[in-house]
Image 1 (cartoon, one colour):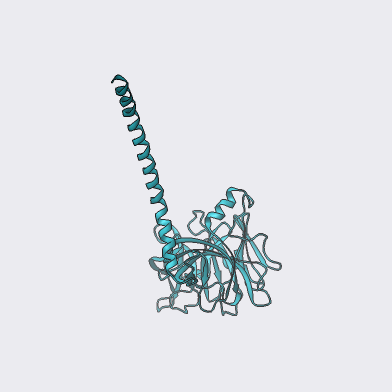
Image 2 (spheres, rainbow, N blue to C red; image 1 turned 90 degrees about the vertical axis):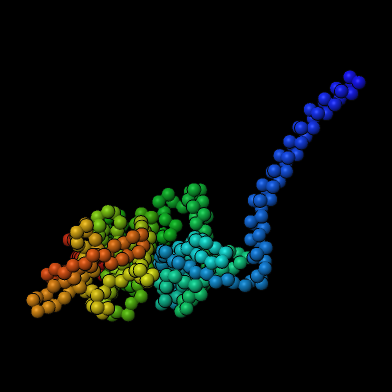
Length: 336
């Protein structure tokens, strides 16, 4: 009897240990199943679509740079873009991609329809009308960041910019932090310690391209103003990157220079009461003498909006591009 009670006590000591160990293994199994369920679900949903079928999405191009070598014999040139892709399988997916584009149509519309492969999310196929695109290389922002961590690129190199400097024959002008330049064929760019960024502004104007780098608010955020004599396009500089500024409708922000749109004849940097800002200037001839309207341009991230406005006696700046003591004629650079 005493031996049997001893065995029972031993069993009672063992049963709880076995029970808790089994429960722990079961809990770990549930956690693994819970982690795998979303992945398996996404794969099953993707397989429900016919193989190879593309689903619609959009690609918002937030930055880009051209190769300084110019277009090849077929009229295409290399361009590196950065953007954000959205679609049924993707939400704010960062795209960093080098492509061959039709030079006559570049830069293209910033918000472009794309096809997204359900079996390979993030494989971008552009569908922009009027733009021929041949996909060359694609990499996610995570891979770019990893290459930086592994010191694959030079410590100061920017993966969004090209190596080298201004192309041969380009007109150049130094600014605080780099050089702005315009090539003989109208390519506009900036070269800094991080590399070279460039772009081509679509224009039908017979006048040469001009470019001026300013710091309108004196806060270190530099702006690039590119003029074809009829209109002036506005960009933000981030090192060697040239980023498009958009208006409230999502179109590239453009200053009117010849009153062609009825809202401007010049660009300046003025203080309308809350510090110096970029302003759109419009000459207003009148019976009491010439006046000019000044409209403040407020830039938040990459978006520009019209701010306060006033009317003052006209000055020669009403029909020019200036910023404080800087002028396009004296401090800018013009296409050779």
